[in-house]
Amino acid sequence: MKILTSCFLTAFLIINCNASDQPVPRRAAEEEKRLHYMVGEWFVSGEVAESSWGPARSVTGKETGRMRLNNLCLEIEGNLFYGDERHNSLTVIAYSPASKNYTASYLSSIAPLDTYTIELQSSEVGEVWKTTWTEINQGEKYFYRDTRTIIPSENRYSYQVEYSKDQENWTVLYALTGRRLVPDDAPSGALPHR
Image (spheres, rainbow, N blue to C red):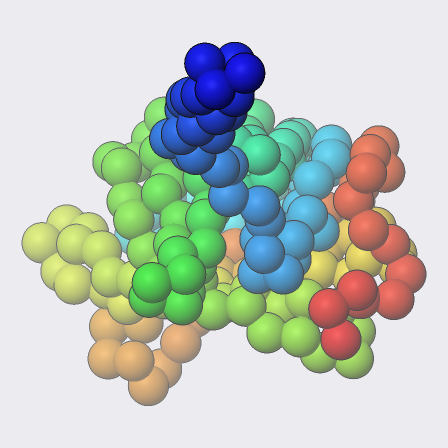
């Protein structure tokens, strides 16, 4: 009986120790759930203003938003046309619990890899995502800021990018809108995190 009890206890300890050695997948927190607003297929249209980057032109195309890695990050794949020029991009947005902010990595067919911080805010209308960054264009430093306002109840968003040389006088570079084509599993109506 002692041997049977000892064998049972040893087997129990081995099973439990091995089970506790396995990493437990982290679950998405409320902060990651806010990224769900961009899940789905989006038709994008708008205008790019004339600037040192090129002539004014229309923008049309599609963005596809998917949650990845057990809902811990958002991947947005862009397939847009700026006039006749094709522009493919990939953005991955994740929340960092350590620094308590959202970070995006952006890679496109016409620009180098870029990483920046996104500020997410809630408003009465929907989610407001704001980003700022700097770039060098033709040897000059430019400051950028963009605002994406997501309106879940209407399955649409607006997106505007502005630039400045002095951070006081801003010029609109892009003004785009997105309309969700496939509602997918993204939330609509009331914002769940209020």
